[in-house]
Length: 439
Ligand SMILES: *Cc1c(COP(=O)(O)O)cnc(C)c1O
Image (cartoon, rainbow, N blue to C red; front, top):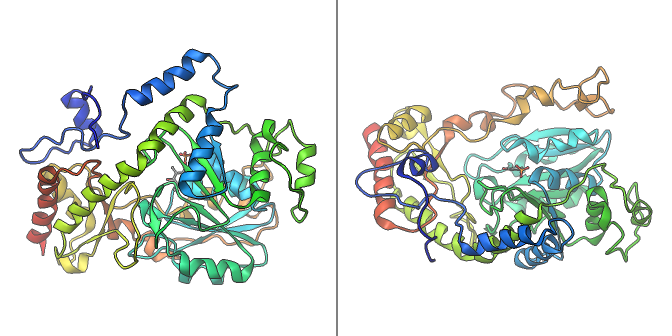
């Protein structure tokens, strides 16, 4: 992979961008910079700007076609962010007032919060200690007559165990929505995450693995679902691709065409065309860039193989499975192998050696957040999660022990974008020496 042209960042700015990590004697250079930007990105964005056709062009639709082809789905629909793509996926899957979705507690709020806006509620499931993804054993007993969808998050790039999740959904006629915001390009047993469920939805925000500024994408093979997604917030495209008029949804696709011109959701969900232009360039180089990231991150973890208490968060036990762009890279911590020293104290010790990127935990567990207990979004005088006749599935502290222990079992590690053995070895040696000094 060619390096990006001269790094415009000052040493201070570089330190800020890498979380202040400067270790040992080697210069980390641009090893942490993301996204990688070249003249091609600049030209693509400037072309949109100069054309003065920043809305009435077909760049987003070209990006969608290229994205669909890359990920291997029939349809892709672009969004201004991942949150709107997920909300739309919920509605397209038939989530409505009084319904439930199942979602892991350990994720970013956008994986599920939109369901409340549809009058539904969220039944939170726990995660597995090793994958940090939804625990397949904690799904089935949560399914009730009003459960419409299971949200699966491929957490921090780690694929969820789809072979154990999909049969449960099929058995109960429940849709599967994959939130692939962390995992663009990650493979589960040889196949791209985001393509297993009825629909995949994801963020393409800068900071995520596939970064285009601000953006989101929804992918599906189900044309019926695709058309519903269009009608929800892409009003000017409603009815366009429609050759299908299948009934069975509350609003059939025959009805959708009647509503063309006004979005059913009341939202306008158009991706900014400058982000779409950048997205096309980023997507073109993404496959080769994540191969290098995987080489670099696997190198880091291979160097830590056998170190007590520290374990790689990667799908070692499945064939042809990868971490994609290794977004928000985590390590797994086992205090019992390190004399009971807390993960937080371990991270403090690593930071004291100059690796500022080492912090215990991940997201906060959502199931105890007041929004999912008390918020009265619609001014009904009742918490929204029970205001539409939903089952009361609220859960307090202590109910999802693995999610609640996240600060004891996981920590962040440097996210290398280039495979530079010398630099990576220096970072790895800080983690190794700190763990060995505690063991
Ligand atoms: C970032 C993120 C989202 C939301 O995407 P935005 O583009 O920020 O709206 C959804 N789910 C997960 C898991 C995320 O990390």
